[in-house]
Image 1 (tube, rainbow, N blue to C red):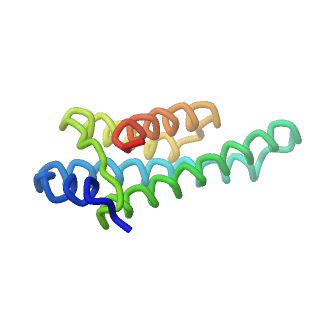
Image 2 (cartoon, rainbow, N blue to C red):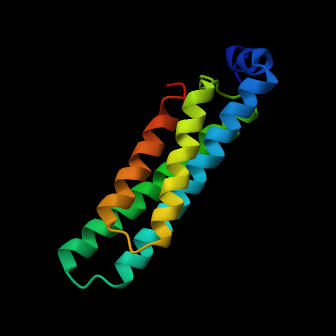
Length: 131
């Protein structure tokens, strides 16, 4: 059930603030999805068991983060929780990093490079979520 404060925060958020939160969520979701797919491709050609185990753990962590972000966004949209509207430049940074990650995943990327960008995008989205 939505708290009064969360509903009030959603009701008082401007359309522009809601759009910035939505754009940040979509870019983050796309970035994490791209990273997950890239890690699956890297896993498919990894034969070292230690490296493979590490890749699987990182991929699962990103899957968990993506699911948590989706739950938080849906809770925001139904008024259950509030979120801090990001500044336009923060949204631009998230979108730009997500774009970099999309390009990187089309190339022969290393897992470390994919994870670095995915973690950066996700960390920026975490700053929007209310604890």
